[in-house]
Length: 190
Image 1 (cartoon, one colour):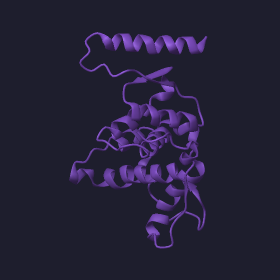
Image 2 (cartoon, helix red, strand yellow):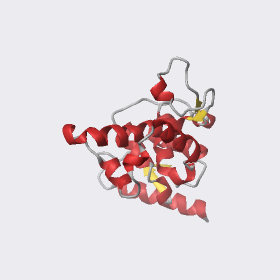
Image 3 (spheres, helix red, strand yellow):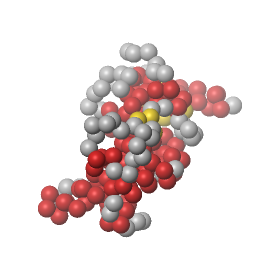
Image 4 (cartoon, helix red, strand yellow):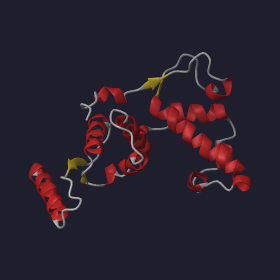
C-alpha cells in the first residue's frame, strides 16, 4: 500500500490552458486560478442540467440531477448562459453549503494515491455522508487511508474513520469487530 498522501494535495487549483476551447473557458477570467473541485462540479452540473436535461426527451437519459435541482431553481434560467454558470460556480458557491460535493471530489482525489478499483465510485458516494455520522467503519485499508487523508484536509467537521479487521468468512466476528471499533471511539470521546 502507498504511504499516506500529503493532505496539501487536496488543495488543488487549476487555470485554463491557452489551447482550451472558448466554450469551456467562457466566464473564466483569464489567468485566474480556481479550486479544482469547483471546476469539476461546474462541469458535472453543466452536463447534468444543460446537456442531459435538454436531450433526455430523445435519449431517455437519467435526469435525477435536473429533477432535484429543478424543484428549487429554474434550470433553464440557470443554464441559459455558460459564462454566468461558470461565474456562479467559481465566485458564488460556498464550499460549506456544498459539503457533499466537496467530499465526493476529495475522496476521488485521495483515492488516486492508491490502487483504483471498480468500487472507487461507490466509495466517493459513501463519503458524501461523512458529515452525518459520528464514526465510519470499514474493513477496506485503502479506503480508510483515503478517508483519513480527506478528513485531515476537510474544512468542516466529518466523522471519525475506523479500520476494522477483515471478517469475511469468520462467522460472528463482524459484530465483535464493530463493537471493538465503537468501544475505541467511545474511549477517545471520554
